[in-house]
Length: 353
Figure 1: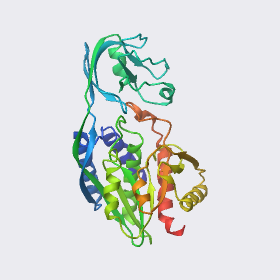
Figure 2: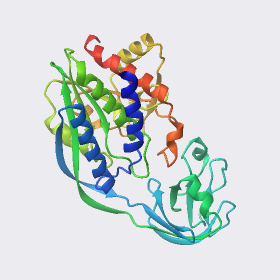
Figure 3: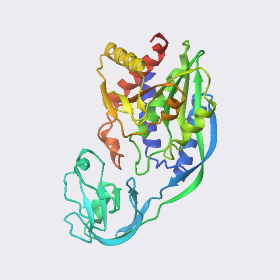
Figure 4: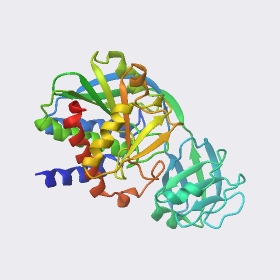
């Protein structure tokens, strides 16, 4: 049964994580409908909190060439543009640079734009992307198709008020432990990365614990929406936070890498007792988690911390930044399921720590 259910989630990942989950977008609405169908089929009763946020709605950029019209994924904070140029891997000034995973060229400010071809992996960490040069992502196969052609890129992002929906579900009785992940993607992050896999992990935990959890701690699982707009989802949810909420476990970045514990982030230090508890439990599980600091990252749990709730940020992200197209071949499912079982075991025993 477990093998069959895992196979379902692996197939479901391709279905939901390939959606461009920007708040207010059509694909965001499609995702929520798929989640509603998932919960109905699994017979899991959910509560939906609806609210309005002013979110940046970044449209996909359009690339027009002789071969046709293609959608480009704008990278985070890429400036608006309407530019024309030759699409080249051996580029010179005034060109639109095509950059492949095996090349690390120098990016200069006289380029019209940059297109990263294929998955956004470690290779691109060495690139010095310049803020004033528009940067985009395109599948590797399409880059090879348009190389050498003349192209035009049009990218005009906008901001608007959008309808957002947090989703939460509870199991058990007693004081609250809240487990959070986010629905929406960061701007410039496409499909199976960072927020995407933590959402999938959250769904698997909910699906499994809904069947048999009877612990003395009430588990509240919350999918936060519109987090990309200054943590709007979390700020809205904590307005009615249950009085006896003891702790909050943030799955932001929990995926298929080795587990990491963020002991300090942009909201300060996380709970020493929770860190010790997860470290001890992980070692019993045969895993040695890494302690890391992300002092420049404002975490999804920051509004919970302001309410006096103890926080634990678990992260297992690989060094893939705002993953691009073609990433699914990089998924290490064995690691993902090991992390899922570790979390399930920890949640079932959290009242003992």
